Length: 520
Image (tube, rainbow, N blue to C red; front, side):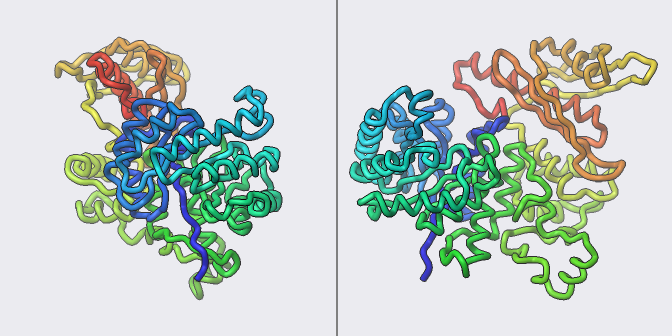
C-alpha cells in the first residue's frame, strides 16, 4: 500500500493574502463546505490574530465544519497563539500553526533578532501552543533560503516541545526542484527526532515551480503538501492544489503515493474560488482551465475521437469538468435546465438567490442567442455578491457622446426613501460622465482606484463584465456588474461599490465590527 500524502488547504488564509482578495465570513464558509466535499485533510481557515473579523470567521468554520482538521495561523508570540486557540477551539479536530522567520535576511531586517533568540522563541511558542492543543504545526519561514544547520536546530527543538507537523516553506519561491528535494532529504538525515513528526512542504510560485517543488518534496519523503485552489496567494501565488493532486493521481506509477481527495470536486472548487475571489482562472490553466481538455488541432481532434488517451492523460470526468454543451441555455430554457447547469459549474443556489439569478439569466437570454458558462458565472457573481439591502438602485442611464461632442450622462436613481432622483454631468469620457452624475445624485465622497472591463464571451452580443474599486474613508470597496451594454454595467458596478461603502458606514455607526463582506 502506498503512503498517503495529506492535503493542507490554505486558500482561506494564504490565498486570501492575494492582492485584491478579501473573503467575507459567508464566502469563507461556502469555500470551506466545498473543501469538505473535496475531502481535503486540513483547512487553514485564517490568521485569527490579524483582525476580529478573521477570528470570528475562523471560529464559525471551526464550529460548523466536520471532517478536516481546522487550523489557525499564529506568529511565535503568545497573543497570536491565544487568538488562534480561541478561533479553533470549537473544531472537531483543531490545530495551531506556529511560524517564525529563519533566514538570515529575515532575522536581520524583519525580526532584528539573532539565531539563539529565534530558537528560544520557537521552542517557547510551540510549548505554549501545546498547552492548548495536541496538534501543533511549526514552520520556519523562508526555510529554503536559510542556513540548513539552523533549520535542523529549529525543527529538532520544535519537535522536542511537541510539534506534530513540521513544515518547510519555500516562502518566496526561490528553490529549484532538485535543490529543494535535496534540502528535504537533508532534514530527514540531520534532525534526530524527525520520525516523531509529519514533514510538510509549502511552496510559492515566484519562479513558476511551486508544483514541481512540492512534488520534489514528496519524492524526498514529505507527506503533507500545502497549497491553494487555483494557486492563489501572495505575489505569484501558492502551489496549485489541483495540479499536485492530479499529478500524484496520474503519475502514481512514479511517485508511489496517494491522496484521499475526491478529485471529481476539483472543478467545482476551482469555479467557486474563482467566483468569490474575483480572480479569473486563465484559459490554459492546468487541470481546471477552460482549455484544459479542449482540442482545436484537426490532428488532435481526430486522435481524441478515435481514442481519448491519444491526447488526454486524464479523463475530464475525474476532475469534475462538465461535459460542456450537453445543456444549451437559451431564452426558452426553464428553471430545471438552469439549475442543472449551475450545479455542473459547482454553483448551488436556493430560494431568493436562485430567483435573482434566474431573472437576470432571462434578461440576458432575451438579448443573446445562447447563454454559455461564462455568462452564467458573470450573472451569478453579480447577483449573489450582495449580502445586504442596497440603498440605491439604478433606474436609468443615458449617455450622449461622440468625437465632436462632450460626453454627457443622465442617471436616475431610486434612493433609500423610495424617491427617485435624477441628475446629469459632463465627463472626460462616457463612463466618467456616468460616475460624475451618480456622485451628484448621491453626494458620496470617494476616489476611483481601479476600473477594468472584459468581454465575458465572444461575439457582438457578448456581455461585458466591469470590476471597479473605490477608496472611501481609507478603505477599498469593490463593485462588479455584467451587462450586454458596457455603460450600463459600468454604472451598476459603480453603484454596487458605493452601496457597499454605505452599508459598511452604517454598520460602523451602529457600533458593529468591520464587515469584510461590504468591502469584497
